[in-house]
Image 1 (cartoon, rainbow, N blue to C red):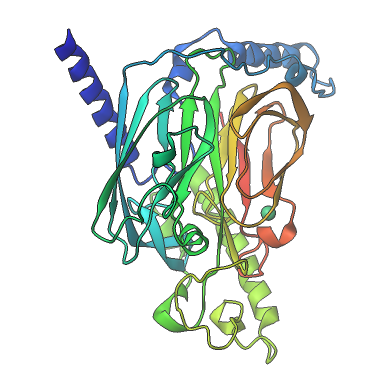
Image 2 (image 1 turned 90 degrees about the vertical axis):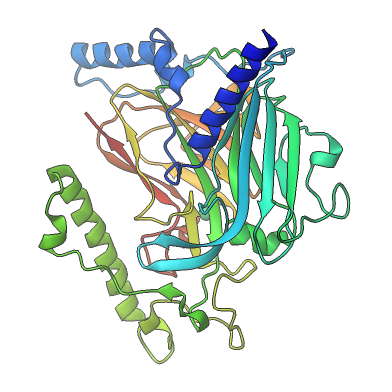
Length: 414
Ligand SMILES: [Cu+2]
């Protein structure tokens, strides 16, 4: 029996490893258990939306359906599952493209920004084996989790800083469902702003509210220097008709839209090209003289903002079908405040810092402060192409050029 459990645990750990090493696991994660249960609240919402559409096509949208959804619940106690989730992380420098043509020498976990999504169920044991391949010391802090003190990842207090070439193993029980973060806690202001962070989601053992789709949004801030090191803006890729060959019509349309956005950005740059903006031709804002670091530099002086490591228009769209119940998990690892605003819909704030709200608030803008996470949900009941963006409008720019940064499209698909 013991052997069987060991085999199951090893197999699950392997599965998790495989999923965690995927380069493409940035934004859209559709949880498999969502699909399994057919008659959940999302289904009810969907059928409601469809029937209402049939009966009264000219009816006016309200938030009644949103208000009548159940709140998330918090368990009194959880049982250990006996499941081990083992993840291998390597902290290393990797080239990371924030938006087409803009690259940074990022600090990454497993060569992606954010690092791999770590996902477990309440009661699982999480084991993270961290190898430090950076040229400096590092550590990982588990932001919002109730880990044993020596697992908290704060050098000089709870552990020694992990030296280049060293490996350190973190191990703790996933003891509270919710949306959390993990990030470097050494030379944090530099290491975090260079990309050393990720998302950690703990699913409840029993869930009373199922969503049809789920997306994660991790907000980062970057300071991309424009002078030394060959970093920053490169030539715009040539996207002539030839490059379109082989694309479907939909892809073609969205590619053209992206190109329109890029040409808007370029026009903005040209108007800025003046003796007062000596760096405008380089398509980068000027940095203080003497700043020759060449790559990302630390501090609040951000000129790029990213959702899951990408700036608009390269952010991943939120794809929904009419009538679906959609969950967004928002996490702010940057040093900026982000009032996130959704067009065309209201949403409910269902959890803050992993804790369910017993009385979910309905709104269309939620302010996500540094270090905070919010879970919000909305009913896709207003077909079209909408935007979800930060309303601190400097944050919807790339190097001062609008549109960019913290913006994603909500797209209805068939
Ligand atoms: Cu913002």
